[in-house]
Image (tube, rainbow, N blue to C red; front, side, top):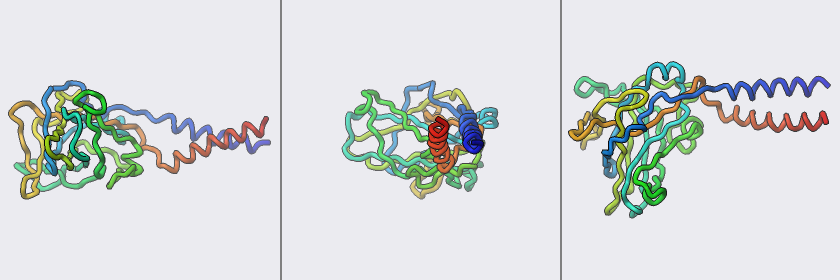
Length: 242
C-alpha cells in the first residue's frame, strides 16, 4: 500500500520542479518600428551585435527562445526563399579595434521563409525559434548546449538564398530597444569573406529581435519524456487506488 504513495510523491516533485522555471526578456527590440528596412541579397552576410540587459541576463542567463522580424512587399516569391541564422561570440580578429564575430555557438541551418504578404496580408512577419529548435536540435545544424549561459555580447548573423527576379526580402529596423542595447552599425562580410563594420546614413540600425531567457537551463528531452511518463504513472496509480 505504501509504494503508490511514494511514487506519487516523487512524480509530484518532478512536476512541481518543472513548473518552477521563471523566464523573461534579456533583449527586446521589437516595439519601436523605425519604418526602415535593411534589404538583403543572396549570400549577403549581415550581423547585428547586441548586448542583453545585464540585470535581465543575471536573472535569466539561459536562452529559451529567439525571434526576429523580416520584411517583403512581394505578393509571392519566384522560388523558395531560405534564411540561415547564426549566433557568434565576438572573439574574432579585430577590425578597427573591435572584435569581429568568431566562434559560432548556434546555427539554424537553412529554413524556408514564409512570405509575409501572402501569409498575413502585411509586409512584416516574425519568425520564432522555440526551446526545441535551439537546444535539442530541431533541425539546427549547431544547436545550443543546454547548460550554456548566454554571453553578455554576441552577434546575430543573417544570410538569405533563393531570391530571384523581383524577389525582395529585408530585415525590419527597430530602435531603440526596450531591453538591452546595440550599436548603430552592423557587421558584413566583404568580397574577400572578411568581416567589416558598416554604417547606415539613413538611420541607426537596430534589427527587430527578441531573446527570451530563463533562470534554469531548458529541460533535456529525456526530462520532458520523464514528465510525460510520470503523468501516465500517476493515472495508473489513481486507477489502482480506485
